Amino acid sequence: MTDYEELIRQALKARENAYAPYSNFYVGAALLAGEGKDGRPLIYTGCNIENAAFSPTCCAERTAFFKAVSEGCRAFQAIAIVGGGQGAPASYTMPCGVCRQVMMEFCNPETFEIVAAVSESDYQVYKLKELLPEAFGAL
Image (cartoon, rainbow, N blue to C red; front, side, top):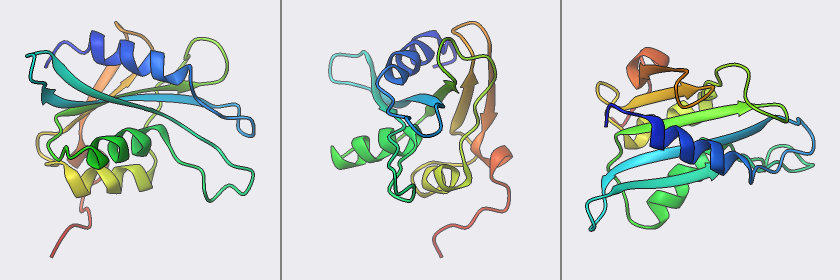
């Protein structure tokens, strides 16, 4: 998928479910896992979910990955990420280091694409290897 409009649209929709009462930074993610049985893109979404204790907080990207993995999916092509304060996103949101490491666990760093978006027409695309060089991986 080189046209990321639908993936970004799904990330924007997922962002609406974010629970961020502490940071007021709302993030949505949409993870592309190839095609479903009906031939349509198979997309898993996630939002950030904060917690007063902070460490139990889960980022949108990890929510999407964990949802997909818990349903038996292990092959991923790209993820779109949108985030920001209330209202429309105003700048690109990049995955945190923990999310990048989770991506490394399940994705090919040479081919997996990270789409940081502000809107369906304003986005930047990176390969995982660009955002996590010299990554730690399985031995």
